[in-house]
Length: 337
Ligand code: TRP
Image (cartoon, rainbow, N blue to C red; front, side, top):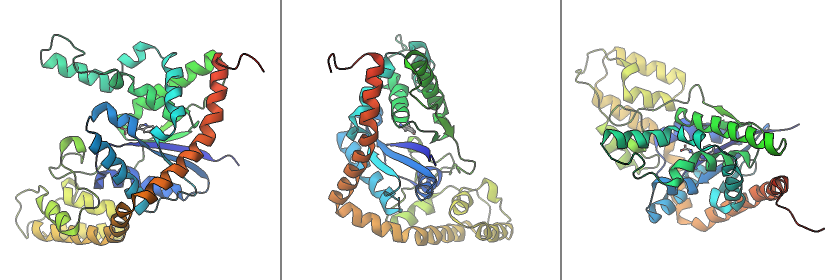
């Protein structure tokens, strides 16, 4: 039976937070145990360079992300877990794809358009001010990540759907010119891909600086949870769980039965202080065992490194021959023999 290939990348520019866990990491790790699926999960460190010029941050983020996924029980026997930069075939493929991608397609990329829009609004004379070729070409690098392994499904957040569509366009164009080499990937945006709210009630996101890091020590976790914004309803007054950040986080971790009990407590007017304590204890309990594994892994980066190297070897075992075939298809091949 042909396994379905599921691939996703994580940009190495931040520290994993509860929103990443619920929206991306937890479902990916669940998939990693599914024998009908062949997952490819990788750290997109070349993507990180597009927005992060702090070398220490890129390195530290790679370490934290790898440790997080391993601590949470990623099945690295099944899943191929690697670092993008350890598979140089991906950047080579990026060039083959760059040569057939219309500039006009890239002009339409949301990330690029948003940068131009910001410049226009700021009254800049040059609409491309501060736009690097990395930012402009980003969707082609991402297409190479995906097409290199002929992924069928690509789990991503909503903001990335356009990039998967671009990868399809690019794949189609290449196939049309040089033969049927690439599978056309599909974006998978999970139903329950719970978008978690952050400290200020907006979507939990690094760009809003409102995140709760996944593996904070218990005392720090407690402090952050106490900071979550609530309204001014008093103890005893009924409260609405559905507009409440505390509840949204609780529900993302709990069973439906537990969530139903908490809804009841809201109706009965649970005090915010008490609810925060309930939430803290629940999450702390849930994360304690993986947090210990995480701390231990951070103490032995050589173990993480060798796991990533083994993953890169598996990835390259697929990428090397495929890239040879693609090069041959465009006319780059030995002149004799
Ligand atoms: N650009 C993605 C993000 O910011 C990360 C990423 C890079 C990715 N390459 C990918 C996701 C390939 C899926 C497939 O979230």
